[in-house]
Image (cartoon, helix red, strand yellow):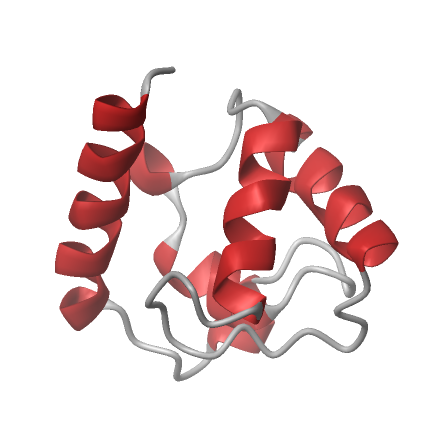
Length: 93
């Protein structure tokens, strides 16, 4: 993916965040390690399945480091290693 494509994806995600609800998201989580807030918004067309895990990990790290705007992630472990593992799981579910 080139930089323009990434920026379009980020813009679409940020635009769609207004439609997200975090109520009852815990019941939707497929894996206890996946934050319910991710599952609440990132389903169907907004799913991470099939995305490059490395790219997804970099975006999650940017959110953690506040260089990319996004609602709080609610990660129990926000270390680089934990984020990389989460990205692998999210991209392959």
